[in-house]
Image (tube, rainbow, N blue to C red; front, side, top):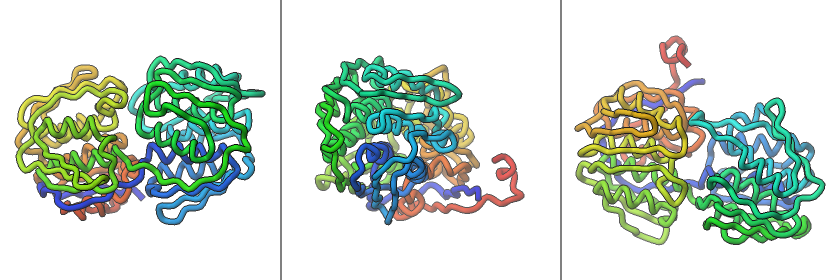
Length: 431
């Protein structure tokens, strides 16, 4: 059943909120579980539709999967298929990382080309080049990537750009390859480091994750064991709550966060006038009683400002004092939130990959539609700070990446509900 958020905005967020495990990490850890027949227990797993999709993908391949609250048990005793079909992979791009794991364990894989949010071109050429360098023979036909290798052998691989997905797929394939693999210009995101730490817990030999050069020394299959592992906190969710607090002139303490993962966000929020303090090793407090000031943003690979937070930051800046300039350098189609924010009274001009945001005194509630996950988060932030009532449609995007969004925000003083869209309503007809 289609649903919508109804937000009565204008209230500052105040209180404490716990951040969930990282969506962009747990999905790759689940894919990595295919490398070993031993049991794996993952803790701090968020309840998200993307996690459900990945459970379906690896179960289709033969992995035993069960979940109890925020704990997932996985055991790939014997894989019964090496094909991940279109109807599953098309729902979520991250499921494409089963390619490297299947190739590493089984020597072959057939995986549908990936889906996910329609935010721009995200090809798989770097994945293919990296796996070919390890000795795989790869064909792309009829929407599927088919890979085979009698034996994978370590290689030196230079990525043209620091692709997160390519780095992860190469890492997974290289774990059981013969010899050493060196990935240069590797992605440095915290989720890459989390994957490496997890693989090492299983018995892999991965070094340098979190830097531009990762070295994977291949191990024998019998070296990999089971493990119990806790997923790293979600830096994107944490940053979204930080931004919501600043946008509403609030005072919020976040728990279960790694401040070092949030450095580019903390820097920018301090620049707009927020006060951010560490209250314990894994807790941050953000305060912003005054109207934030304008700032400029350029999205870059980690440790730069994340493209995933460009839209939420834009929502904050719509009511900042002054003119902000936002340059999107990662994806060419990631300004879809602009039209919806303008419906709420924002003043935004776009020219190519640059948006100029002139801060207004206040936004006004309106009916808007989420076009993708992070654009949806931007509309939530806009609704929380707007005068009047905001209705947000197409919630399936938000369900992919934010666990318990309504209860968490309401615990901070928001006035927000989730209700069905009436069967005969105009918005239902448009869905």
